[in-house]
Image (cartoon, rainbow over all chains, first blue to last red; front, side):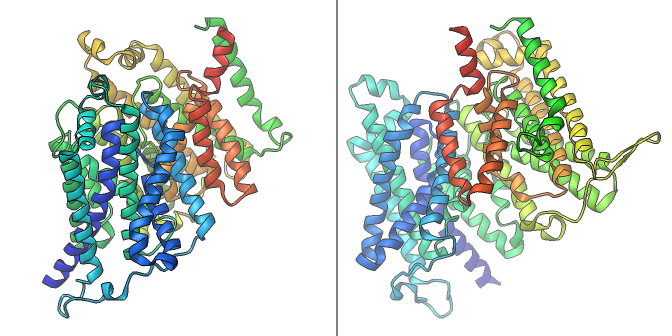
Length: 288
Length: 317
C-alpha cells in the first residue's frame, strides 16, 4: 500500500511538473499580453511531432534541443501574423482566435502524422528502473523532473537577473509605463510569446516520451494547465508552478482510492481554492 | 439607432421565416431536423448573448449547462419516467442548480479571469459524464431512449414520428425563451445589465449591487441554455459527452460573435450560418475540425462585429 501511494504520488508529481511547465508558458503570455492562449496545447503537440520527425536524423538529444526552438519560432510567426493585430481589443477575440488555432493544429497534426499513437523512442538507458524495489523510478522520469526543475530555475533567473526578464515583469504590472520609458513593447510581447511557446514545445517533447504521441496530446493537457494557473493565481508565476505541482499530486493520489475521479478532482480543488481565496493562492488582489 | 418600426418589421420578418421553415427548407436542400437544430443552437447562442452581449460578461463554459440539460433530460426519460416534459423539467432544473452554485463562486471575478474559470468549471461535468460509464454510457454517450408523444387528453402531439410537429414543438419553446429574454431586457433589470456592461464602476456608484445582477444574469442565461440542451437531447434522442465539452462552448461564442453580439437577433443569424456550414462541411470532408478552426480565425480577423454589425454600419453610412 505504501508503495502504491508512493508510486501514485510520484507519478502525480511528474504529471504536475508537465502541467507546471505548460502553465508557466500560458501564464507568461496571459500576464503580459492578456491573451488566453487556447492553442498552447496545439503548440505542445507540434513540438512533440517535430521532435518525432527529427529523432531519426539528430537523435533524442538533438531533437530535445532543436524541436522546442523550432516550435518557439513557429510561435513567433503566428504571433506576428495573427495575434498581434488583436492586442488591445476585447480579450474575447484573441480567445476565439487561439481556440480556432487549437482546432487547426490538432487536425493538422492528425492530417500530417496520422491519427494513431506513434512510438516515441527515448534512449534505452534512460528507461531502466534505477531500483528493484521502487520499480517506477525510471531514469527517464527522474530526468524529466530534473529537466523541468532546471528549466524553471533558468526561467526565474532570466526573469529576475536579465534586462529582458525585468522588462517582462515590469510590463506585467504596467505595460503603458514600460512603453513610455522607451521599451519597444511590440518586440517585448513577441519575445515573451516565443518564450512561452518554447516552453510548450519542451513540455511536448517530454510528454511524448512518457505518454506516447497522438494528436490529442495537447488538448488533454491544456485544461489542467488552466486550472494550475487559476489555482496559483493570475499574475503570479511561482503560484502557477505551485498550482501545477499541487494538482498533479492531488490527481495522482486520487488514483489510489478513486481512479475514475482522478480528472474531476482538480476542478474540485479549484472550486475550494476559489471559495476560500477568489484570487488564487498567490494572486494579488485587484489585478484581475 | 434603429427606429421602433424598423425593429417591428425585422421581428415580423424573422418570425415569418421561422414559422414557414418546414414548408420550404426541403426545397432549398435542407431537411427539417436541420432547421430544428438551427433553432436549438440559436436559443443557446441567444441565451449566451444575454450574458455576453447585454451584460458584458465573457463566459466560455456554457456547454456545461447545455450538456446538463441534455443529460438531465436523457437520464430521466431513460431511467425514471417516460415523460418528455418530466425529462425537460429535470434537465433545465439541473442546469439552473449547477449554474446557481458555480455562479456564486465566480461572480467576483472579471474579464479574462472569469472566462478562464468558466472554461475550467465546464470540464467537471464532462469528466463525470465521460467516466461514469454505468449510468451515462461514458464515451459512447447515452442512448436507448427517445422522446415520447405528448398526450393532452383531448389530443395527441406526436413529436416522435413527425419531424414537422417536433419542429413546431421546439419553435414554441424557442419563442417562450426568446420572448422572456426580450421582456427581461426591456425591464429596469435589463437596463441595469446594460449599464453594467457600459460602465461597471459608475453603475456601482449608483447603488446597484453589481455582483447580484451579474449572478442573476448568469443564472438566467444558463437556464435558457439548459432549455436548449433539453431540446437538443430530444432532437437527437441521444446524449453525447461532446455536448459538455469546451469545444461546444466555443461554438456558442462564435455563433454569437458571428451574428453580432450587440444585436438581439444576431446570434440567431450566427447559429443558422454555423449549423448549416457545419452540416455541409462534415459531409464533404473528414478534416472538418480544420475548417471550423479556420472559420473561427476568419471571423475574428474579418467579421469581429458580426454579420448584423456590418449590415447596420452599411445602413448608417
